Image 1 (cartoon, rainbow, N blue to C red):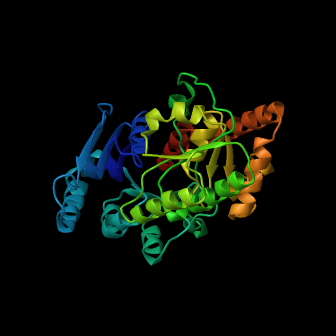
Image 2: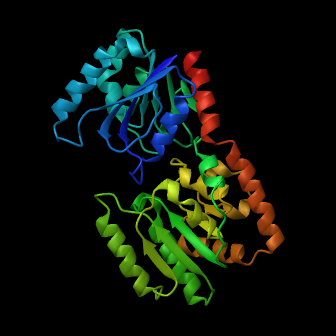
Image 3: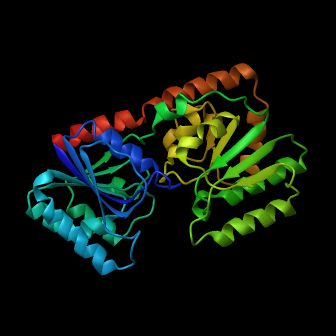
Length: 344
């Protein structure tokens, strides 16, 4: 089998989408050849059986050129792929899905988000299968949808040099955006501070272009809550450099909705953090005390307080349980399942 992948970016330096470079590298071990059409091409180092083609966003801003090149590459490389995998952006399926199906190619879409729209529904019509990781994703409603592993490169994370964990340390990592509910996390830390609970906390991440004001408001609010000595904001860090950051913290907090199922949850688990999440996908897989009952600051603060008071043996058992759970979401498992479905 040979695969055409459509994605936003191929760039190891990208803080949000850099992980996809590892996905392509792992997929290339399964498929005879991989052709990647990306909107933006940056830094990459991929095997010889991978060809990376760009729609040109790194050089120009023209949607007409992007569309023209999408069709040009789809036709030009007709004999170099048997199936198409579109990652996240259903617009590409709506534009070219009919052409791929007309050429006899299988079409697959990866879309994992709790919000969708009519365009998502139209794109699904052209697909043989739709992939997502969360049972709360918008795309779960389709009969053709298949739940997949999250796809975390656990080898890269687990094999990093161990670092000492800071006592009573709390971490948040990911895109700084209102949908991630980081404001709830900051308010919870303010409550702990007011209750004289001893802790340190770090927030790593950059805002999207529309969330600069959100980040500034978080920093202002942290000062209002007297968190200047307890909470530090850091720029985003590339995934290949995150292991020592995860490894130096005891608790990782992720308050994204269940429909998102962020990879950072599993990255933190792999590095031995206790993960406090507001994601119902993890129910039954990890200790109930690590699942937020409601995304409200008072509740999050109380659960953090309870976790900080756990005995060392309880922490050890919880970490072991989480690592076992995370193993099922490895990138290797994802590649194996994806290949099996596409070739069948």
